[in-house]
Length: 553
RNA sequence: GGCCCCGUAGCUCAGCAGGAUAGAGCAACCGCCUCCUAAGCGGUAGGUCUUGGGUUCGAAUCCCGACGGGGCCGCCA
Image 1 (cartoon, rainbow, N blue to C red):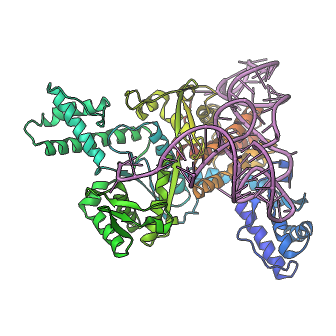
Image 2 (image 1 turned 180 degrees about the vertical axis):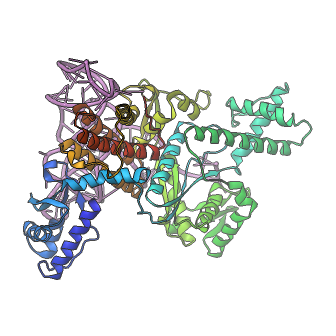
Image 3 (image 1 turned 135 degrees about the vertical axis):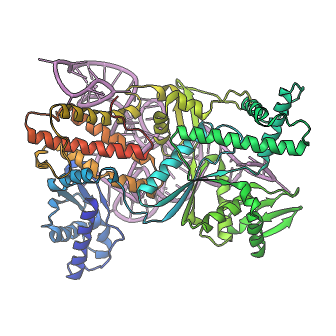
């Protein structure tokens, strides 16, 4: 609807330029159209006349007069006003909004899908936690935001791949292997002084037990080989946990990408060679450095350490170059905010290797403060008193958990109160939204019991929807596609959550004030069409966010 | 010292990339179930948008500087 009006305004403007009613010939890239806060200002408003005031050298209100005259008899518009300093306010005909309801019912699950992405290939890499232990709450936020972002991009017409980068090559994997081996020996009754820098947590013992059951005690196997076996076993098992935890969250990756495979295929060496060739690296203090300062970083960064081993940065260079080789137009990394210092070197690396740094977008996810009943829930890795993501999901449920993670912009810190998230009452916004959906379903059940068929698109006379609240609901439905586009363009999935809350609130209010199933059958059918359109949009948005849309609560 | 994020109602946060009278939820107070699910609705109260400058027709929004909170600055990951 908004787009149709935008087009109309644009056409009118071009016409004014053509016949000399306006002279500057300055067509803005996009006609700005907004929904005014105050409904008295109409359904849409544009500031076009004000922005044209300077180039036209005329008063905004005069320009508005000219534009309004050109649009006067447009079929979409019921009324066009000039207001304030030069706003042009449009009130659309009711039929426009009835058309929206039909469109929603006609398109069903597809309503809200769009094509701003135009098939652009985007990869969203997220979570990518080290496979050395279970996911915790911070990973959870990144997981949900990454997943929802990917969904939103897909809905907006991008071609999206979800990827998990598995850090299975570094030294922390060796540490895991050593830790498992020590626990394994302990199980054999050996007395072990467990090292400070080992993985202390109890799950390592579980891993050792499982390994012992499957592969035996590794007695007589040379140390290095035993560590390697333990490491590989550990990574494999931990990845299974991680995948299962993510599954419990409704998250599935299209691809799990192994860091180790980069080394196995010599990709790291190849990229380093390219850097050398371009004279972007140099040796100093027995180490190999990348000249990231040439591209805006604070200092140069090490690729190969003086002991000959590679830094994570080295494999990240290869990994990210390889992403673009795979044909992605844009690559999004979802990281914890504590990694922000890493961004300049990544962008520098891309620039050095001839990629526009803008093709890599890093989404930083701020910290999660875990609370219980308003009090900080302290997690010490040392003490082993940390709560895993899985425990949180099991305690509060996937829907509530996801909703809380998505409720805030990702660049602000999040207080996650376990008790609040667990509450199954109106204090909990998840249920508020889901309840709206369940209510429509309930109305449908009652209608069917009364022998009324739920109307489909184009089957009812929607002009029976005369109430202001009814038109307002239809207008809200019309905004859903815009919410998706906004969320996709600005990488802000939380917008969909806010949209959901607004729509649910509007529906609850309507429900309380007016009955859907009334004596007059025409009105009943019209209202059923409206609330079912609401149901479709609620379901679409909930599903998109990975939340269930219950038919009964 | 350098860098990143945040600062809006008592609390937790939105604010549609510059627009008209600044919003929601929770907490407080007052109301609404012989009526499609009260996990709901209506109403009252609550604000120098941390602060000082700047940009312009117009700033919570953009720029610069303070102040306050959190985070990061490794040949760790």
